[in-house]
Amino acid sequence: MRQFTTIPELLISTRGSMKAVAERLGCDRATVRKYARDREAQSHAVVNGKLMAVFGKRGKHRHESEAV
Image (cartoon, rainbow, N blue to C red):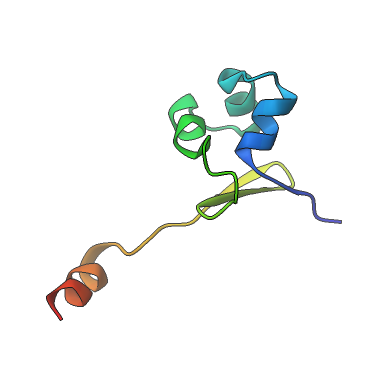
């Protein structure tokens, strides 16, 4: 069974400790801070304890769409 959560929910469970959330997810505190306000999980999700992040338009494709 898959368990979905978000970083803001994990921050609540750790009483706001970004360090504890970062250790739990195996990522940097800066990453936790980056997604701390993403309550609707539009940019990230935590699935079974693993952080899944959404990357927007990057690189060549982004530049092509801006030129049009």
